[in-house]
Picture 1: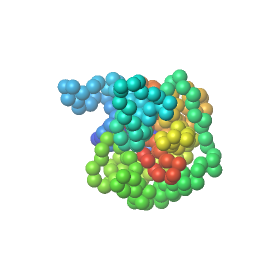
Picture 2: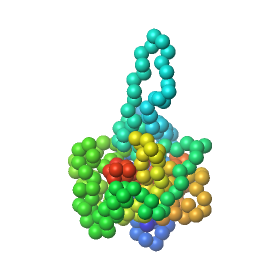
Picture 3: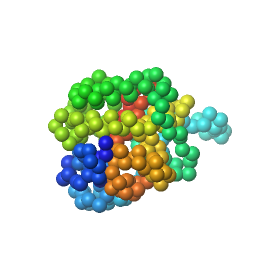
Picture 4: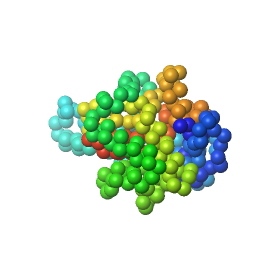
Length: 257
């Protein structure tokens, strides 16, 4: 399912012309408070950055190397906990791409997923197919295990928040997007580390400039060519993505940079 042009803003923008035959919402039509839409006027304070000048997120924090030594007379450096989804500038839900680094292999075979990951992915897809967004509630969790649904804090009921992102009143459009994302290829990030994660779609881990023709066709199943051109300003895919830990915890479903 394709989605329309532009990035996410908190208020719904006017519907735009779609490039696919199937009904879908534009990025600019989903309410979100974390993405500035390039080329569109925004209400900004005097100190607010201009669209197109949004800095890339900071790299993920990691623990100091095990073989690092401390010079005599100096205190041992404080050990830094690995960043968790939703915490600080090391937010794992944000794209963290080294344009010169090696790219993780793209996977399509769900049988290669760890059983807890495959089970959570299947449960989410089955919930989406029912058309009842309430079916996501037990999968989203509560408290510290709550799935991250925004790059900024949200207030109130998470299901109500998801409905507010959808172009319809029942949340079925956002369910369609979630299902489409999970039908795409995926990547395994940071294997063997505390940050290990399985992420859909794989574009999250790929610089847009390195996508080949076949991969761009797969990208256009989720976003339009107009969205693709807008995303080039950021150099990476910043539409909806899903992260699941090897233990089967659904860590995030967010959009934005």
